[in-house]
Image 1 (cartoon, one colour):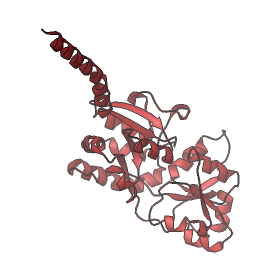
Image 2: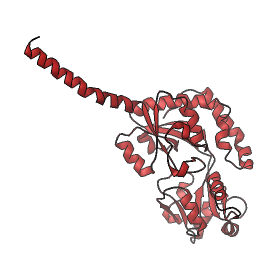
Image 3: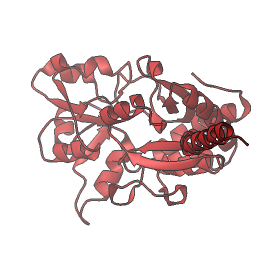
Image 4: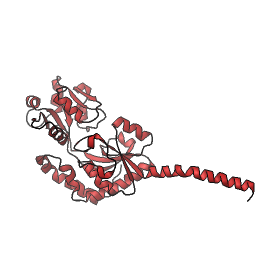
Length: 302
């Protein structure tokens, strides 16, 4: 071999060695999903508020327990878990992180950046007030955001960037006496409400029940959650991933796995076990219909 050929071969070898790790890294990224979890019991039961190291360490909450069943059907991926607030998640997503969420609400705005596939039905948000205050202001067992807004002397507080649904959000505006704040977790608002720092907030009933169950033994619950007159049909919870080539491939695998999980008898029970018995009984048929249709139906990706 001539000196020129040896030199050319050597340069090609160096180029191949240099490209190898990069290709391995890109391949690794294609086969890794970073899951954004939320410190939000009992939907997620994170130990000390920290994400698990492995899928096996996921909690038994309404969403992370369900997620475990899904991940068992995705052995081709490595799974990493993080806890990011909504603004930080958007930054990471735009920076190229392969990010998925197992607890997304679909909106037209979010569809611009993410693919969605339906995962599980949920119950509707409720109005949360101090028990004594609710007895003074709410007639009957249902509350009206319209009536609360008309008073003009009440303050509601909600989480910034959280989706409350098209029927409720018109009544959750500053001109209606409602302000949005940034908080590390949803339970912070319940603690503020207990302390009398606002008049009401909105939350899922099982979150309120779990929060009060964690208080010191013997303490009487001070908060009550009530159905809202203006609320529409309970929303569907979605899995979502980046709207790019990587996310398109991942969401297709997630859609298939979700249809397999929907066929399991325990699928409808994971969420319902956290509901009060009366609410669980009233919602049972709706949950069962959703999972039966999801198991038998075809691909559902938006």
